[in-house]
Image 1 (cartoon, rainbow, N blue to C red):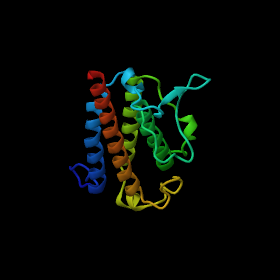
Image 2 (image 1 turned 90 degrees about the vertical axis):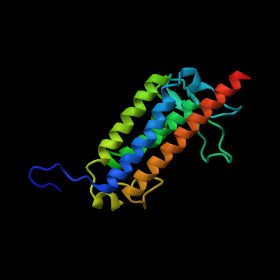
Image 3 (image 1 turned 30 degrees about the vertical axis):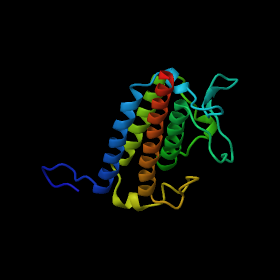
Length: 185
């Protein structure tokens, strides 16, 4: 809503979700600027999930269906692929033509390319959220195709994206610190 000579009113709920996203993104940037390719490929334990080149030269993530219990430890490369996977899937389901298959979402191959990929995904997601209305946030129309959230509102999904990003970024930080600690001993 605007009146003559004023700026548009921000949707308070969208603003909250976007500010949360921006806050966790600062933690991502804090970690990612310290990571190199070797950090991404370090495996914290035997049998850790990572990304590996397939016969076509693409970087694909280790994955099992159903997931084992417990889920294996993961490399930073896998964690960053995972962020890119669920962000691509969620964004394309909610704002695009539908998501590609998991196997088609590949890891970019270097620390720098991965950081650029994730920054682009974050910008695209943030840009898609900004014009939303309360009716958009409360609707399940955009989330109906999601395999894990068809009964959830778009606000639920946007909040989950923030939570999932926070969890993965925290795991990246812990994995990086663990590698540094093991190298010191």
